[in-house]
Image 1 (cartoon, rainbow, N blue to C red):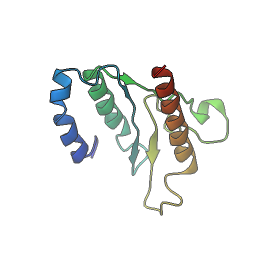
Image 2: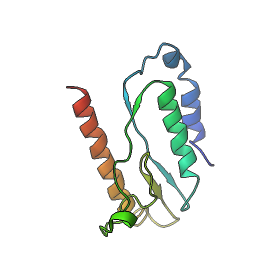
Image 3: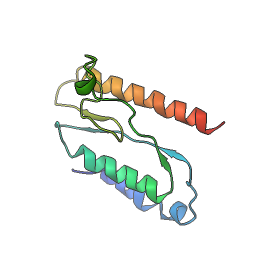
Image 4: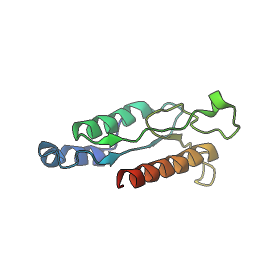
Length: 123
C-alpha cells in the first residue's frame, strides 16, 4: 500500500539497536520491489529501503542497468527506468507470465551485480 509491507516496516522499527551502535556500517545493501500496477508506488518503496540503508551507514548497490527504452536492446530490461533497484509489475495472471520476462531478467542481472559487488568488497 504505497511502501514496504507491514512486516518489513516492523523489522525496520526493530533495527534501532543496530542503528545506534552502527552495527551495519559499511555493509552492502540493495533491494527490489514488485507491484500490481505500472506505478504501484514502487519508488516510495525503494526510497524507504534506501533511507533505511543510509541511516545504518550501509552502501547501497544501485540498479546499474540502462532501460531498454533508451538502449533499444529489445530485452525489455529495466522497464520501469529505475536507478535504485529492480521494479517489477505483476498483474493477476499466473506466475508463469507475470512478472514479465524482462522484469525477471532485470532482477537476475541485479542479483549478479550485487554478488559481484560483494566479491569486490571482501577483497
